[in-house]
Length: 410
Image (cartoon, rainbow, N blue to C red; front, top):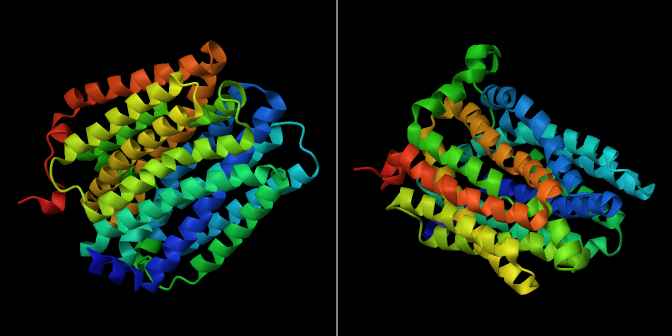
């Protein structure tokens, strides 16, 4: 395992890629903290926190299938680099609005819509590019390594964002723009992995091509079960959209405290990612995946009723650990089952489910919180997550009984 990690780090393109992703993720996490606190500080309405997610989700869900087609028929490196240019533009616009003392949330919703466009094209291209940068025998280690580094960004990013916010939103957005610019330079240095074949590059964008990924996922019930389980579990159980409410009105810890609350799931996920990199899941795959979702649901319930900062941080840490287990298994299952020529389109379908669970889940949390209050909304979500996990064991028994990944079956 140690030799595999050394071989990966000697791969210059893989190293550049994960460093660019790390810095980009760090920037996005910092931006998320600043946007959430800034909007709630201006409006004091939980529903507006949900609208941040909805404004990202709508362009995402409309564009993600064409984005998957382009990830299979165009240079994936250029697609990702173009998306980072758009992310950089979003950061600069947020910086400009904050510099002019933003007093309305609507410009932020507009910028987040543009952000959703960038994510729609970036997610399938990024997921499809990684297997092209490493050898197949190193792929599991590469996923764990990449996921762990990404989770580190979810720890450091929110914490840094919360601390920098004490100097003002402009300080956060200026730092975000700088990090994205550095990431863009690293992506421009990639030399392999993104070229589409001549035949693929001329493939028409028609209904058959757009729906290829959906047909593939529908025909692989374990894959369908895995990504739909993640969709509904995070859709109902996602409490992160309401963290500004908890930081301001429940725990009374301010923007720096919000940063630590945002960072806590990343701590649990990063530690779990390190363990999975050393001791990868090879047996009882289905049980491990469902176990991760169940832990996620119980941790959400504990966080929802907590009025102690330390208990809340512990619950969010455990939440992140459970989520990391299910994400790791789902990602490996999808990538190992998918041929490279349609990997972008299948990754797009996977991204639809992820985007729906995250951004649409944020809207759902904000809407329910506006109706019944933040604490009941989180508790209801945690209970719904546990119900989904139980229901999916019956709806997808083959996923529940899965012992090994496809390439490990004897």
